[in-house]
Length: 156
Image 1: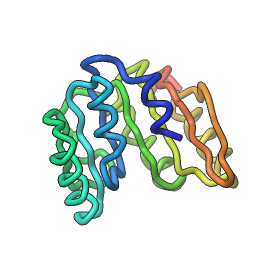
Image 2 (image 1 turned 120 degrees about the horizontal axis):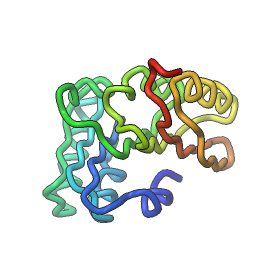
Image 3 (image 1 turned 90 degrees about the horizontal axis):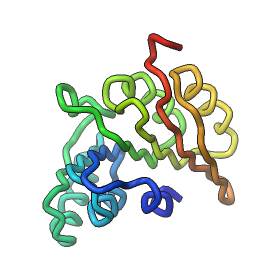
Image 4 (image 1 turned 30 degrees about the vertical axis):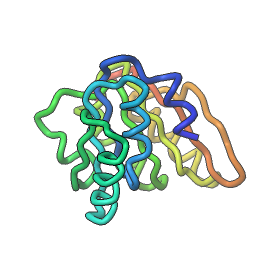
């Protein structure tokens, strides 16, 4: 689901962070769609290794894979215009606490991997942190959301 939306939200040169990158498919796709710097991150060192292999095989030189807990590795870096997160709802909800520092105002979070029973929880967390759900699509048991940062946390 996230992959289909990427072609509609990636703009040339934009900075992209891929949280919970797994194989790196979203980071690689963002690069091929014209993104500038792309940082793929995962807590699992095996996933990072797989992502590095896929990045090399796909000849995308603007993508780097790093081991990190959520956005910890991005401290001190400029905020991204796009963050992708194809991970479970609990992690997406935790991620909102870090987005104020790492997602540019007006930036977009593509969140997927959300089981149907947790859709309301993710929507509530988004609203509490100054985000607006722009679109949502549901599969058999999974949902994906396009979420825009519309306010700073202190404004909420």
